[in-house]
Image 1: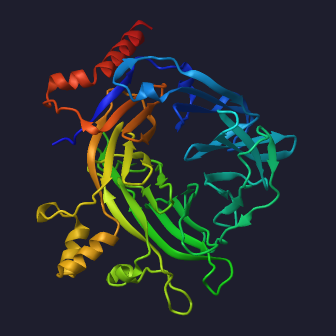
Image 2: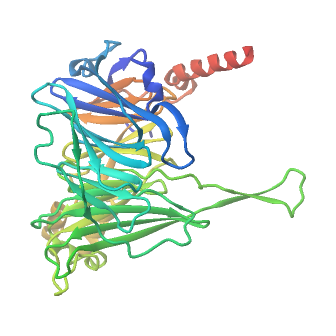
Image 3: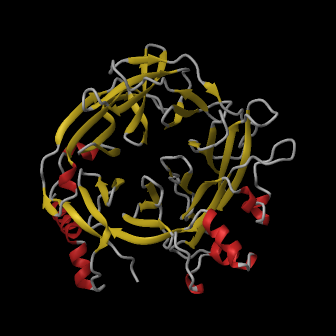
Length: 498
């Protein structure tokens, strides 16, 4: 049985701008009574010189438009115009985009004579001007920056090559205040944990993903680092939780958790058409470059991340280590100090397999991390909710709930564990879009859910109402895919004429 689909409210007729076709990233934000869509074009104009990551003659561009939110939460079909909000052409190429709440950061690179400068342009809504403003932050060093993450008070980034897992920069407390559109030069960064291992057998090493995590310990800055490599036989993903420890006797950064997942690369062997048995072709069936992504809750207590295979992990903060100590497997993973005691907090991990063989393209959490959207390269969106109510029907219990029932036969004990362990994610709805356009972004907004496609189309849905299920047959398939089929028809006609 297909999952229910939320009721659609707003359906656009046409793309609002052909500029969107060049944009590799679209960011949807809501500020007061307006929805803003920002289009990030890494190479708006180029006369590229260079064979490596850094090139001369490439310039990025930022375009932003806005529309009243009332349009997107109304049951209608139309094309009320988007109003231009800003257009900024950058003096260098864009390599990365990161967002946090209403703010977002653009990483770009400028080559002048023999010198390379790396900039992080921070965009933020300003109370004094009523629109988005920015500041350029000149980052220290000249080594290539391959990953960057924005947080409320800091920036995490990694370099390639580097001797450290990451670098940390504290943002000035008044960075969002006037004057705007100015440059801030930062001379240094705090060094993260030194690298103590290498990957000599790696054919490819992917940029690290970095995220700050919550800690109740005073003056502690906690980081999750996600590193992925590939060799001839497998993908390997290492997930680490690292603190600039204030409770440990050691000076510097300490790794509390370090888990490695291995994903073998499968080969598809086939004999050639002629039939000679000694001629065999080997195609690596799952050799695509993985897109690893994550979503962080607003309080930084929950992070959900994808893996190389079609699965994802959820890490949730808990301070109930008295419960964790009664779980044999988890007890060995508690964060232990040199004196034998444990830090009174822990990130509890739960793993999930997707229902279908798909590739995860993005993850987004709502404001309080009780709902989650996962969208795929196959252009499906799966809506998950935290299963708060305990299920009494044994056939519907999760593996965690069944494990708790076996471990704690007493009902009072079971209640404590169900109450304080993070509830599991349960898939509740699914959206299949009637188009071949890629999904660029999604956003939860109050009772509504917005989907941004790659030609500027934004669909909106209401989450507490569902559409009636149509019977699955040839007619309903044609209706749901009508615009996609028409597009293919015209493409075929055009190709045959030419």
